Length: 425
Image (cartoon, rainbow, N blue to C red; front, side):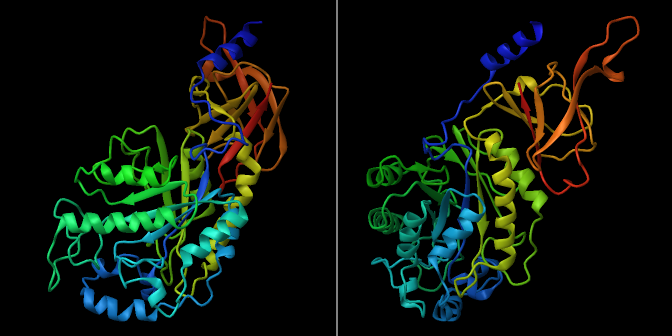
């Protein structure tokens, strides 16, 4: 009876209940696919090549956009790669810092339909997403290195002034509003809006415009003075969670060196991603995993392989994220140095190890109950369990404390994958 009361108390103390599987909300511990693609892919080096290599705007624009020919682009393949990873939405870079527009905008001639590609790839992607049952969101850069009146000394990632530049922030804000209006009026339902590089200028009408054009859209906190009013924060790579917003979406790239396509890129391991993804999803956040397509419009084989391996793992462990609540009061003392997170659904517990495990058996104090079954979700294998005392839980002259002991974990076989164990009560 005492042990049953322990579990009942854990249910009432748990936090952050999320929606059921069939109730689609933007933030429900979801995996998404980020796509960094633009004319910068022609350089095969970095999505910020213009700035990082100190190129002149004139030289960059003469060499890159005229040679951008995405003849092999297939929007349905992009959606298929997203689905192979278990992603449920795509966030696409409509305009990165170089100011090059990936849609047929009326605001500038610096756009994909004026290159050898001659296609509105955002239109094609929006249609493919609808066919494939994937939601679509847009990334939009606040810095614009092509625009001669965009320079903002209050912000970062600003291109040094070029010949003929005449900064005019009011004129630039009107330009941004026109582009935002096109993107959020012409491509159907958009689930999220990802501003990039905070402007440090308070203009609440920018988010108001986004919400008016797309009611229900989620907006991140890198916009026009919207750190406290946005819906979610977007930490990237290994940076700490930023901001105090209710929701979190971590983003990271398959490539180590660049978000856009890079020849001879270094790619992260499967273990890196499964552990990183778990560390966010298990604690209630979303995760956005980026690929950088080649200039011909194809996704590199290495990135596709990463997405497929992540998808295989996600298919095996996804139940531990959906319709669950966090149970931090059950984490307790960690005896082998591993980090541990616990989620639960009713009487089922899921034990996550986002930093890996260091032994083939684990003590799961403070859990004292013997489950009906313990299953390693990674393989479907049933694990042996016992409730017992441990040398560290026993002190001379007092009764030993007993806790759940799970054994038989193939730790070496799973050294490059995040481990999740299901305890059925």
